[in-house]
Image (cartoon, rainbow, N blue to C red):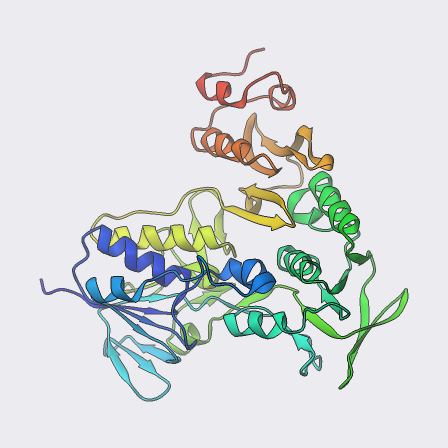
Length: 409
């Protein structure tokens, strides 16, 4: 059989991970990465952290040009894709170019949600390197920066802006930052951390109006109107399914793929923020975390290299809040009736929260205890039964739980 050509639509984490994994696994065909940005793959988490705070590029780039040349990986930047022609086996670019493709990996990611009518030079979102660089120029001492949305991105932007000397005010309709994702205890700890560091918080009330002008932005809530020099809108993303829709792929909340990342067209795969993955543990789900994108890409690479694989791990993520590290595992699978157990003191920025179901861990979140997440991952994977008492008791070493087959009565 002749060597096959893979075209990856999107030149981000999925593309870089897939290219490296394919070559490690012996895939001998040509690999073409097609991105609409003018630069190659880079670390997207840096955009709201290191890049935004300092402007440096240490650790930013994911693929070295010399490695690409040595491994027959072609990178086409500034090349938006129109659609996949499944009939002819081509990827069609908007400039009329047709790329031969035996296999296609859709990795178009997501785009920031926008507020209708809220636009202008003083309104920002962060999804690209250019977005981060444009915002950084505004984060200066004496300037007041508003952040709409207190999720992971919004809180990271707030920390970076404060680090650069700007004043920061965060608006969110939830009364506690990140509580819906991380639980009340860790959410309260993060909220207190931001307040202690000097971030102004306008929580628990909805924004009713936003007015933009040449001089700034006015944000109106039930508590009154506040003026900021610039407003960062960080209210989530939506999957960028335009190419998939034009290509006739099945799309729901993202491009629907099976457990191996295959779309409704057998030669077309999808991974990352755009993919609604049929997860063996959680069912159909779309998760917007970098590690998920990388792991999905690696599993697809194994499949394309002749060793079928699935991404079946609990979803893992991390965020840095100032100098505090927060991690989560399996949080996409939490149910309202799961039993919540705390270990240590999460509210004091030193502890872990576990969610239990039927005598086993289904999810965990931790602040400054990354080692707890490592053990929790093994306990989930091995389906080792544990009790709430064992998890809460710090005299019980979590690693010792890996050696037990049943919970002591």
